[in-house]
Image 1: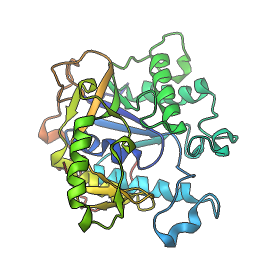
Image 2 (image 1 turned 45 degrees about the vertical axis):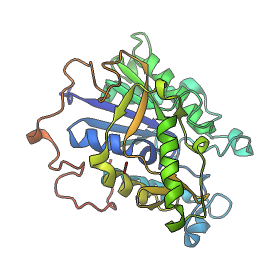
Image 3 (image 1 turned 135 degrees about the horizontal axis):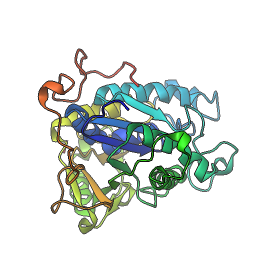
Image 4 (image 1 turned 90 degrees about the vertical axis):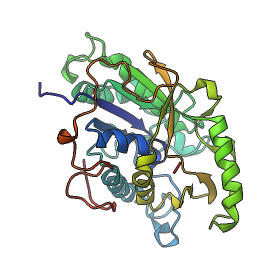
Amino acid sequence: MMELPARRLLLVHAHPDDESITNGATMAKYAAEGARVTLVTCTLGEEGEVIPPGLGRLTADREDVLGAHRAGELAAAMQALGVHDHRYLGGAGRYRDSGMTGLPQNRREGSFWSADLDEAAAHLVEIIREVRPQVLVTYDPDGGYGHPDHVKAHRVAVRAADLAGERAYRRDLGEPHTIEKIYWNRVPRSVAEDGFARLDAALPGLPFPRAAEVGDVPGVTADETVTTVIDGSAYATRKADAMRAHVTQVTVEGPWFALSNQLAQPLFATEYYELARGTAEGAPETDLFAGITGASPAPPAARNGHTDGRPAGTSGAPGGRSQVR
């Protein structure tokens, strides 16, 4: 087996753009520090809406080519974050976006929501046993806000984490591996409320008609639930650039953004987590790898050449392909 980096982080997300909005600063930070950051995206986001009028033809009810377009956006976002290991669960297009809760697309053949849990988990087990992450980040059991694909991504991630460590399970998928720490994505309620208070004051000068509400933010939870705080302020620009790369889905305006509903939200560069499995080190933790033996940041000479998450020889603008507050 080839030598592995000292720090290995796996993130599992439902659609392109979820990673940049939720974990963009975290991904950029750890990539810049020399960790192996692996993103697994479960669908191509084929059922999404489209913001730019000139790209409206891409949607599922017209040409139905949004998935391929969003794959290009995601590649650009990964370049902006300095992340070079990105996979689609089962391969690109294996599972289709299931649409919002209650839509007929939920149970369409090939939708992620209708996928067999163990079959989908097996695809992730193979990745886990290959990259051997110490840390897994995904959604809470409700998927952050109840979207079928987010809920399914949670279930697949947890099931795969369990199966990957079982010695008797599918040895053809690689040597067993146990993930030491599993985190849910979270936002403390007090942080969300403060962000929206600042947004209310700024809203008259923004190109958005009104603000979303605290309850619209995925993963909002009681402050005491949060165990881990990752200060990504040094990577706020990288996160914003990655979000901008998702042109069909996100509009970024300074430290604010909106999805296709055009409801403004705060763009948080500090990102928050709940440790669901493993032992917390400190209160709160400030490092996802805290307490993991041998998981020290790579020395500067072994990193990728930039301190802001960009690979050596690249500019700050997203656009190439690659495997605030």
